[in-house]
Length: 122
Image (cartoon, rainbow, N blue to C red):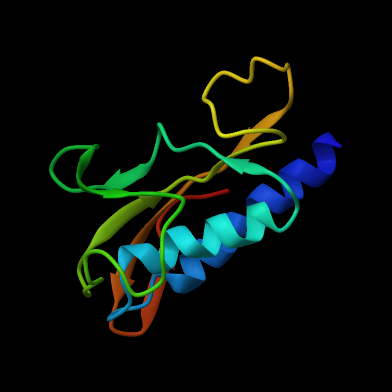
């Protein structure tokens, strides 16, 4: 169960990064995570989200792991974002009161005219 949750969460991250194309919107990133995780019956934590990275580590915009395609801030070349899906085996609460498993993976990316570039190592 833990291995599957980790693989799904890694794939959520990969899909979110793939959605971080110039001209897309923040909702496209969130939808990529949410739709894939929920297709396995998993919950997406909503209390913690990704964020912009600039002069400070945590800057606007917030990068939710849930959303609707075509909604939210438009992604532009030059933006740097931390995308960090946090996926629960059950429910969306930060603390899994049921004792269920949770997985979290993160990368910082730069959006370029050619698409996203991963700036962090796995």
